[in-house]
Amino acid sequence: MGLIISLLNHKGGVGKTTSAINIGAGLVELGKRVCLLDLDPQANLTISLGLPRFPNTIYEALRGESPLVPYPAKDNLDVIIPPLIFPVQKWNLLMKLAENIY
Image (tube, rainbow, N blue to C red; front, side):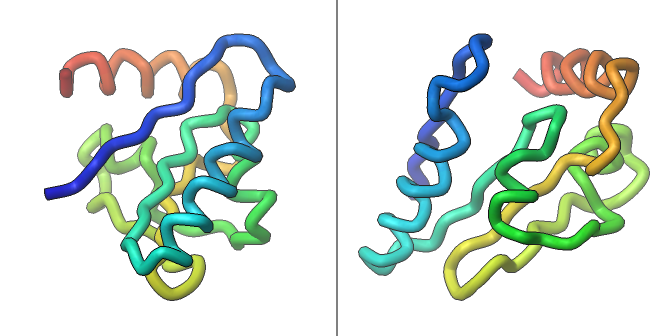
């Protein structure tokens, strides 16, 4: 069974991205399989890991336009990325779609 760890805070600059990357990397070092979900409108986690653009993002998956395909960043570390251009309209729609899941 999997474990979900969420890092949330509306304030910027509090270390959410840095913490997510470091916790994820630490779990991989312990032999765990990790999937990081980048919901940052600026895609900071994705960019920090140096990941390229990927056609299947969380936005298209929630709209039912494509499957949700994690990007393999390294062994045992996958990332689900947001569109790298993420206008406010897409962000608002993404949040509405995500509300329907829970």
